[in-house]
Length: 404
Image (cartoon, rainbow, N blue to C red):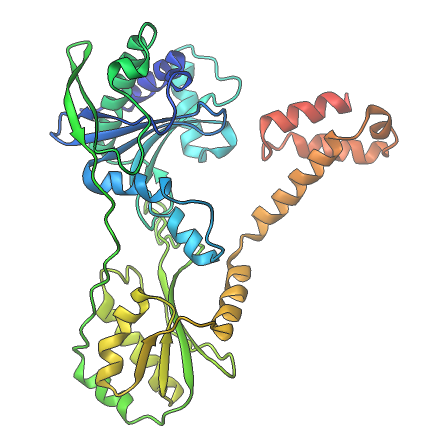
C-alpha cells in the first residue's frame, strides 16, 4: 500500500539535495517510469522564484509544457491569456511558504515533520504536491498512481543531483531545449543508481484543431426557425475566470461560457453555463436554442470571434438559415460585455489583500523616523494584522522588525 510519508521523505531529501542550483527549468530530461510511460522533467527554482519539480507524462503532458513555454508574453486578451495559463498538464512537487498550502495540506506536512523531527523554517520550507490538469484549478495530488509517479521522479532527481556534484549537465547529455530540439536524455533508476538508457523523443507542437459540431436536434432547429429575425450578434466561447466546485473533494473546474451579444444594443443573450461543454457540445447547442426561444427572437447574422466558436455554431446556424462567419474586425459590443464580466469575476478579497500588501511595502520604504510619527494605535493594529499569517513571511518579519 502506498504511503504518503514516502513522498514527504523524498521531498525533504530533494530539498536538501538542491538540484535546482545546478539546472535551469528548460534543461529538460526524461525518466523511464515503472508504468512504462516516459516522464519529462523540468527543475524550477534557479532564478530564485518558483521552486518546484515538474513531471510531464507522455505526449499529452509534454504538450502542456510547450503550451506554457511557448507563451511569449501576454496577448492582451484577458480571457485568452487566462485560458493559455490553464493548459498545463503536469504533476509537481513545489517547495512553498506555508500561506500557499490548503489547511489540510499544512496539517499533513506539520504532522510528518513533527513525527520525523524536521524543523520547518525559512523560505520554501513546505512541500506541496499539485496536479495541473487542463481547464482545472491546480489541486492536490490525490490518486495513488500520480503519487507513485511523483515519488519515482523525486528519487531520480535526488540521484541526478549526486551525479551533478562532479559532472556538468552537458556531460550527462542535458542541455537547454528549444522548439527545434528533437530528443532529450532518458534515465532509469536501477537499484540505487541512475543510469542513462538512451534518448527520449520530444513530442512536437500539436496545433489546436476544432471539429465542427453537427446539429442533430431537429426539434430544436425547427423551433428557432419560426422565431422573428433580429440583429447582428457577436459571439465567443470564453473560459470563466472563477472555478466551479460542487463537492469539497472535487477538483475545481473552469467552465466554458458562450457569450452572444447584440452589436447595437449590447444586449447579452442569457445562456446558461454548461459544465464540461468540451465533452458535451450537444448540451451547449441545446441551451443555445432554448435561450433564443425564451427571448422570442433569432439573429439574422452571427459573427464569431474565433474558430472554436465557429466550429460549435456553424452547422446549427447554417441549418437554421443564419449567416455565420469568423469575423476579423473589431467587436465593440462583445469587448464591452467581456470587460464587465471579467471585472465581476475578479476576486474582491484577493484585490483587497493585494492592496494591503502594497501598503505594507510602502511602509517598508519609510524611514524609522517616519514610522515613529505614526499613531501608536495604528502601529498596534498593524502588529495584529501582520500576525494573521495572510502575508508572505519575508514582508511580515521585515516590517515587524522595523516596528520594533
